[in-house]
Image (cartoon, rainbow, N blue to C red; front, side):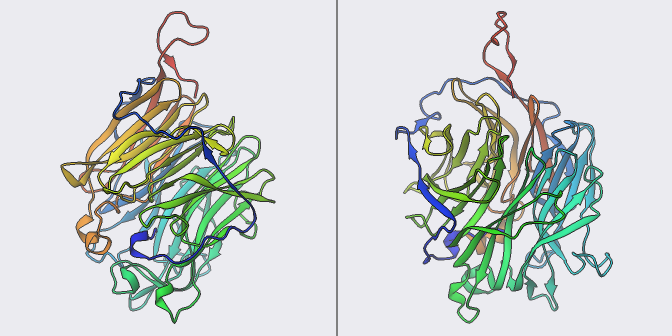
Amino acid sequence: MIFPKRLIGAGATIVIVAIVLASSTYVGARPDDALTRGHPKAGELTCEAPCPQTAYTAEGRVREPHVVVDPANPNHIVVGVQEQPITGNLAFEERWLLSIVSFDAGSSWTSHRLPGGPTEDADHPLFSMTRMTDPVVTILPDGTVAYAGLAYGSLPPPVAYRATALFVALSFDGGLTYPEVTIVEQGVGVFAPLGLPVSRGTITVVGAMPDRPWIHATPQGKLLLAWSRLENPDPDDPARVQRWMAMQFSWSVDRGRTWTAPVELATAGLLAFTYVAATDDGTWHASFIDSIASETVSEDAIFLATSHDMGSSWSVRRMPFNTTLEYAFAVDSADGSLAFISAPQADDGRVTLYLHRSTDGGHSWSNPLAIDVRESAGSMPPTLLALPGGTLLTTFYHPRPDDPHRFDHVALAVDPREGTSRLTLESEITDAIADELSPVLGDARWQLGDYFGLSRSGDRAFAVWTGGEAGEHVSGAWLHVACPGPGPDDRSGQRRACPF
C-alpha cells in the first residue's frame, strides 16, 4: 500500500533519531540530458526470446510483481505477486499473494498460493487474514526463500480491516511451499480502505500498522527487513491521519525465524518506499522518502540510512535531490558505489527520471542523467540494478502520450563511459482499473503496481512487470548487455559480454 501525498496534507517535521545526520553534494550542477543532446550509445541491450514471456496469467489482474534469481542457481527464479479477482468491489475484493517458481530459467512456471486464511489450522499465524499485499522476495545463500508481505482481515460486516501484520514466510523447497511463517510486527486497531467515504478520501487509521516492507539477503546469510509504521496517535482527530510514521529496520541471523527489535531510522514524517541493500564488506543501506520534509507539495525528500557495524549504529543523510513517489535505489555490492533514480516534477507538471551515481558512499554525486520524461506524476517507481564494472540497468513504465491509460515497459542500460541503450520490452500495457480509481485518486497511473522486479544472475538479469491488455499477466524477460568494444585481451574488435 502507498499513500499519495497530494491526498494527505502536510504539517509535520522530520526528526532523525539515531544517529548522525549529514548532507550530500553534487559534483557539478548541470543535468546531462541524454534525451535531447544525443548521448552516445552504450553496449547493446538485448532481450532473450521469447520477449516478453508470460510467467503467470490471472483470472482477474496482478499487481506488484517482484523477482529474485537464486545466487547459487541461475535456473531458479521466484516471483512474488499480488493477485486480484475482479469482483466489482474494489474496497473489499480478495487479494492474495502468490509464489511463482521456475527451475529451468523461465522456460516453465508453477504458481503457489501463500498459506493463510480460514482454510489453515486455527493456530496458524495467518489464519484470520483475508487479504495480502506488498510482496517482496529474496533468497539466502543456502537456497532458503524468504517472502515478506502484509496480511490483514476484514471486520464483519465489511466496513473496515484489522490493521496489517508484517510477515516473513520461509520456503525450503525453492518457493513451492512455505511451512514457516513469522509475524515480525502486528498492527493494532483498524483502518478503512480506499474508496470509502473516510477522511481525506484515502485511508483512515485508528491505531498503528506496518506498511510497504522490503527484504534483502546479505552475502553473509543475514536477512534485512525495513518498513514504514503508519500511526494515528489521536483517533478523535481524523485530521491527523497519516501525519505520524516511523521508518523501521530489523534483521535476522537465523534464516528469518526470529528478528531483532526494530530500530527506528526516522520518525515524525510521512515516510514510505524503503529499499534495502548490502555490500560484500557488510555495509547495510536503507533508503526511504519523506513527503513532509521536502520544500514543495509535489515532491518528496530522499534519505539514505547506512550502518557499517551490522546495525549497531546508523548515519542518516538527506540526498541532494528530490523526487515524486517514483524513485529507485541500488548498490554495487562489490565496490560499494551507490545509485538513485529520482523523478522531480517541474512547474508545468512534467516529470523527468534522473539517474544519480556516487562512488564515495553518497557523500558526493555525479551530474544527474535524464533517462525519461513523462507528462505527469504517477506511482510506478522504476527498478534499478547496479552491475560490476559500473553499468546500471533499469526498467520502467513509459506513459504513451496518445493515451494516459496505456504504457510501454522500457529497459535501459547506462554505462558511465559509453552512454545509454534503450529497449522496449512490452507495448501498450493497459491500466486495468484506472476508471475505478481515478475518481478517488485523480490519477490513472496508480494501479499497475507500486513496484516491480529486476534481479541479476551472472551475465544477465531477469525483469518482471505487470503486462497484458488488462493487467492480467506477470510478464518477464532475460536482459543482456553487450559491451561496446573489445575486452582487454581481445584484439578482434568483436563485442563481448559485459562483465556483470
